[in-house]
Length: 399
Image 1 (cartoon, rainbow, N blue to C red):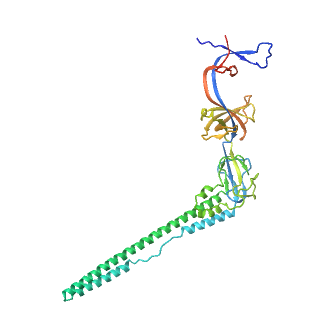
Image 2: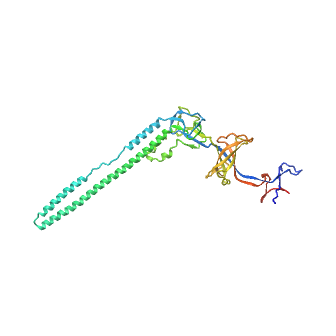
Image 3: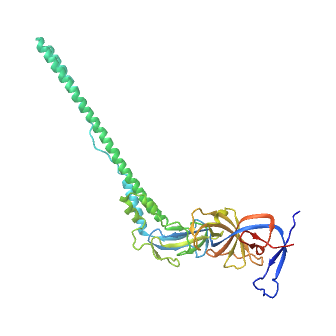
């Protein structure tokens, strides 16, 4: 029969004087659910952040939204004006149309009828020669004349066949040349179309739309993670070297100074440089937490692992959270060493008085307690009752 003992817990050994016995407390051993936790520092983040940059040098024509306003995805936020970008598009379209209409044909003459006429005249001459040879009375002379006519006919046939072969080669060569020139023209047309696409993409982005739903921050935003406009370098690299300069100009890449300094706001009439931050949209519909879990503990964490989050800005409050993903690649921990980013969905929280806790803001520091393992209905003792020895851990039991 299993006997449950009574624990002796040392409460304040350090505070006791040597004159009396140490103060202790006892507590019955009981069965309980025990959770193993992993603590990790974390940072509160928005569900999504997207920034939009100017596609080319332009002037702000209209600002259609207030700063800090809630917008839907696809809503028109700002209109930019850039006559230079419009002109580059017209020029690119004209070049494309010119390349599309450039049909290449190799001039050539059909000499087959001429050869046919020559063959017919030769046949008549050989027929007349054979008739004349037949009129000779001297058999020796007649035989010699007929052989000469036959030899001349064979020589002509050889020359005629060679001439016809040459004509066929000339025709085939002309067709091959036409095909090669057509391929060059087609390549030029494709390059011209690529330049049109790049120029049109720049003009289209003069109308700035919300890439995601969320709260707008006009001007230079902080913490943007997903730039969605003004970056066509990948498309530019796909063009042949001969037309990259023209395409770069169509994108406004020739402007001096690169991206302008970030501005604090956005107003009509304001000049913006290519690549300058226009606005940031932050989706606050669902907050997340990114925790730095040490390499010694990360194998215990998996999607679905529950956690509790404490935010430095809200003392005493606790927020429920659930692991959504664990990064495969390591990062350098802020505490030194190797860690892995663990991302969690942050749910509602409660204060120490069981009142609803205020939602934290992106960027706030937090501490994440990940419940990596749970054991149910096991013998449990307070952690303070465990005495760690050289060989094993032990507890004091009242007999």
